[in-house]
Image (cartoon, rainbow, N blue to C red; front, side, top):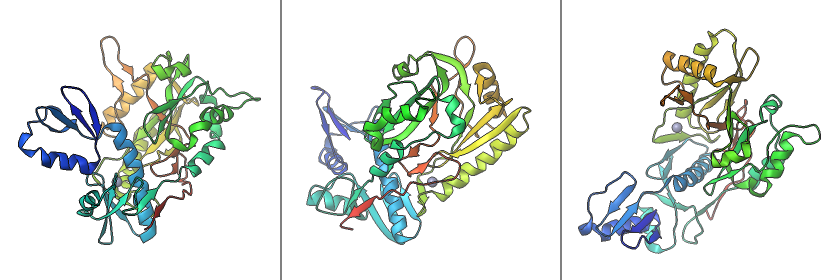
Length: 361
Ligand SMILES: [Zn+2]
């Protein structure tokens, strides 16, 4: 969290405890906040809520911790994403961003047994295994059926520690240098830090330059759909790392999607991949091709949305002129890992045997 001095624009980073304390200490001076990004405001300072990057990393760590605790207790772990607590068998653990003082320890202890995500000697500390994920990428292979589509596609990687890394070369496939080899060399340095890997649905004239949004989309879309679960604040994480409710919700949607698409002549569902956390990616073909020109791709999306507006998200952009599909949209790379759960983006719910641990637990 960040405190901004309005006059000098100086920023100060706050832990959860520091932010809560700041609010209490400035109670008399608080004025109304002006945007939803603000947690509190005085005439001189603004305290911001955690930003997207902070939340991204925290979600990964908390979910992996919830899975580890569920495994340890051999029971479902109830993970409260807002309160940052994990409850199993009437025991509640508080996930703490930082525990550097007795005061900080007491603050987190109000909600449960603190487990710190950063270094401390005051309470147990959670350690994330990134080595297993690194080894997966160093021996990475694309599924055979995906190889022809790596050509002219943009690849990017969301890092656990925030931000993106981008491909530095095209992943075209050639007998002397297969696509997977190009990708492995490309990401070797940061393979362990990859949280999620993406490829562009659109073909790009210059996929490397797409990192600046200037890849020159060619309007030929890879035919795949993202079926996600409805979001809910409490997840019931099983020892295998999945939330029962999320899986039920997305699988129900998947069935609806199948009935819609199966009535369309020429269409076929080729692969249904687990999306890594809670949903499904349906890879399709039309007349044996896994790509469609933009116009047909829009018509297809439009058709599905008119049958059921909730089954997929709408990425058709109706600006001035003719409507177009989000030309920079990305989907998860088949065979890659979702660091949130350590599941593969694959057809058979396969999970990497990550060795996370809690020190002094
Ligand atoms: Zn859930």
